[in-house]
Amino acid sequence: MYSIDQLLETIRDRNVESLRLQFTDIQGLVKSVSIPATRLGKALDSGTGFDGSSIEGFARIQESDMLLRPDISSFAILPWRARENRNVARLICDVYKPNGQPFEGDPRYVLKRAMKKAEEMGYSMNVGPELEFFLFNMENGRATTRPHDFAGYFDFGPVDLAEEIRREIVLALTDMGFKIEASHHEVARGQHEIDFTYGEALRTADNVVTFKYVTRTIAMKNGLAATFMPKPIYGAAGSGMHVNISLFRGEENAFFDPDAKMQLSDLARHFAGGLLEHAPAITAVTNPLINSYKRLVSGFEAPVYIGWSGPNRSSLIRVPSGRGLSTRLEFRSPDPSCSPYLGFAAILAAGLDGVKRKIDPGDPVDMNIYELSDEERDRLGIKLLPSNLREALDRLEEDRIVRDALGEHVFANFMRLGSLEWKMYNNFVHPWEVERYINTI
Ligand code: ADP
Ligand code: MG
Ligand code: MG
Ligand code: MG
Ligand code: MG
Image (cartoon, rainbow, N blue to C red; front, side, top):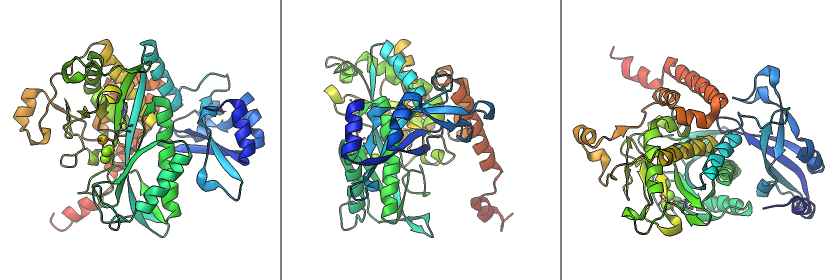
């Protein structure tokens, strides 16, 4: 995108005074340090130091000196930070150890490593995520669970009070280089979706991270809280992040085969086979919160069973109707609370394992899986996704392929943090229990 000369020119022309150097921790949270634009040369030459032991899932205290190296192609001006004609821009960074090696705990590095494996097989992975989120009213500076409007799927003003805010989000994202495809009100009250055009996996993971903080920032400017929490309201639809996936060989979509059954290539079928086989372990990565599992229940178009299908929205993998360049698998379990870097890396490794081992996904199940009886599901061999975080972590521990995709460093920290979260949750006495038992037992 940007060469170094173009970058310096833009910084001069647009009067960019400071740069936000960004990266993410293993839970997907964005970290940022601000430097004056005049320090860019030094940051590019020798990196910018930071204390890795203060970042969740990074280094131990004895080996905490780490370096950020900006990826100049990620340069983008933050539109809401403009003051008069002075600007602030961000650069997404890779994390390096003092010895000059990439840091294995950097989620961006984990995804790059997975993409390299695909490249060696002759493929590049394209990803198109669909992020859903809620807009809630705020009280005393904190989010409530009171939806900002009372509209539903595809509703249009005046009931959809968020039209203006969605527009503002879309404009900010567009200024930052996103190609927006659609934005609409979602099923639940106060729930929305904004879709942007798919692209190469690393750039898209960067975009997911950007999307979330742009959305939250613009909402905040309007006095609202945007949240990507997977299931904020019991009984209402949760927020997912469907991940549309295709493998390209050069300019060609290698999932498309006009002469094959469903016009899906063997490559696409085997990729689906790999996703189905490794789905339980992937879930730990793509659905990393206690709360994620409250979304994965029947009745809200979220997947519960491990199966694939044509247009059926009850299955884990749907094959949307587009063909040619748009031929893709839609993996429907992920939610927007995950690290997109780790999530895409797990998905890619699982799919490629299916390709290598030619895993047959079986026949697609083109009926509403929720409506089948347990016996029918058993007969069709349809298994369940993990129903809670503990189960998902256990399945991750058993799965060599997904574990290796994360690498030992990330895997170990991921298990440690997840297990801690599970323990805290289980030991806590929740309002639900008190209300249910205190007067009757
Ligand atoms: P849905 O019908 O599931 O609501 P959307 O229209 O909201 O689907 O989103 C579809 C997503 O799929 C978009 O982000 C789009 O860019 C993406 N997409 C289209 N073609 C491909 C492809 N070949 N590979 C990956 N993603 C793709
Ligand atoms: Mg959609
Ligand atoms: Mg749509
Ligand atoms: Mg949706
Ligand atoms: Mg979708």
